[in-house]
View 1 (cartoon, one colour):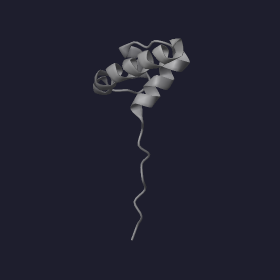
View 2 (cartoon, helix red, strand yellow):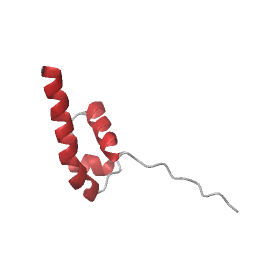
View 3 (cartoon, rainbow, N blue to C red):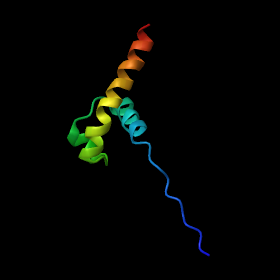
Length: 61
C-alpha cells in the first residue's frame, strides 16, 4: 500500500503577521502578490489587525 504524503498545513494568519513585521503595512494588492487570495485576506485581515493591536497594547503597558 502506498503511503499518502502529507501536505504541510499553512498558518495563514501567522504568515500575514510575519509579512507585516518584515515589510510593514500591506495593501490588498501586496498581499495578493505575496500569495494570499482575496477570500483569505477578507477573512484573516481583521484577526491580524486585532493581534497587532493587542501586541502594541501589551508593549505599551
